[in-house]
Length: 252
Ligand code: NAP
Image (cartoon, rainbow, N blue to C red; front, side, top):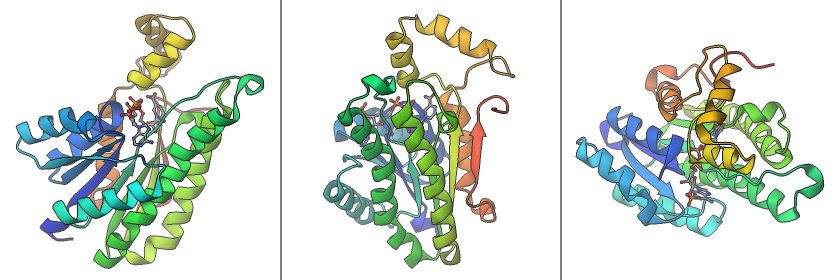
């Protein structure tokens, strides 16, 4: 990999885990495309990166829309260079018990997490295969093991693990690795929204979660960014098709 193709795309990078990952990869020396639903939403992350001397652009795209994904990846290739690192992080929740879960709650979650990762990976793999080098990281979740109120989300996050292993098998011969990171509880707007949904204050919700975690704290976005940084590094070329749980302890 030459200097000019150290280009990474991070989806859902306007905030939370995606923003921390984009900032970390920029510090690692990547030019970073900060992809989120609205281009303007990515401005903050881009400003943090450029203020620290890094290179980044904000790109607006809905990852579940094939045309927008194709246009976004083309724009990144034209403005930053061929993307050889892709972090599929964009995500949404539509939690509900099965009997109350609507068809649209199901479709939205499947479309953003699963179809989004498929479309982004498909659009980026050509650049990676041409470069003979690539790194794909998909955000799974501890919910892949099953979680009450998340039939849609746990199915999507478990699906991403199968997707990741298949990409690892198909793309390995082109120098491309694919891995999944499965976070446990990470303090972000997403978990704050869950606290609100169950009628708890966020501090109380975090304290309750921390008491169940072996390291006795909840995760922060940098815990995930650090793991992604390793998986997309050149030295991690023999690590592929793995699911790394980052949850402060083992999970049942
Ligand atoms: P977050 O704070 O809600 O951020 C998610 C980002 O994704 C938002 O900026 C959101 O944009 C964007 N996004 C949503 N739909 C999109 C779409 N169709 N196209 C492009 N961008 C889209 O979430 P997070 O907590 O950082 O989570 C990041 C990833 O980690 C997700 O895949 C999540 O499932 C996974 N994860 C999180 C946790 C946790 O505890 N936080 C645990 C396990 C796994 P808008 O703001 O416009 O909606």
